[in-house]
Image (tube, rainbow, N blue to C red):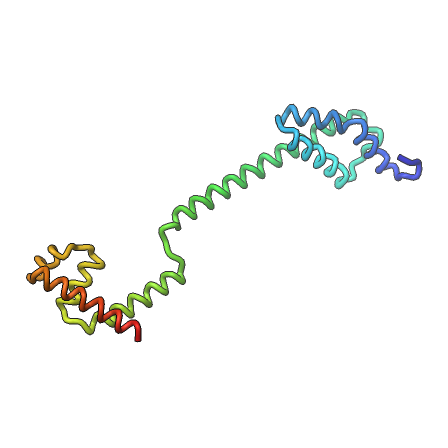
Length: 172
């Protein structure tokens, strides 16, 4: 430290030299983590530098440093609470929306369904009904046969014809 330094810079240098070790130790005890203590000690001196408070001739520098550091600890805790609440809300939102499709996916699905519906209109009523009961409602071929009053073999034939018709129509 030279005599050419401005008084504020000289006072900060003195404050840092005389009390940084003590502040770091105090914060380490409070926080239980030397990394966080080092960060907060640095932040404390940065805050004092930024505020340009008068430090020359300070009667209780440790009280001033500990008060500033305590406020930073509180600010950090509040910020952490806000971040945690935000992340929790974000996780809940993502969890809620996990089962939903994006607008682009919905549009693509609707367009595909429109195409399939248009193609299915060209089938016979029984073939169309068998296709819908099997692929949309998840009924077995036995259940479809009973519901439509036809044989299982005829249900299989309708399903095969419907699939071939859809495949040919969509390839064009």
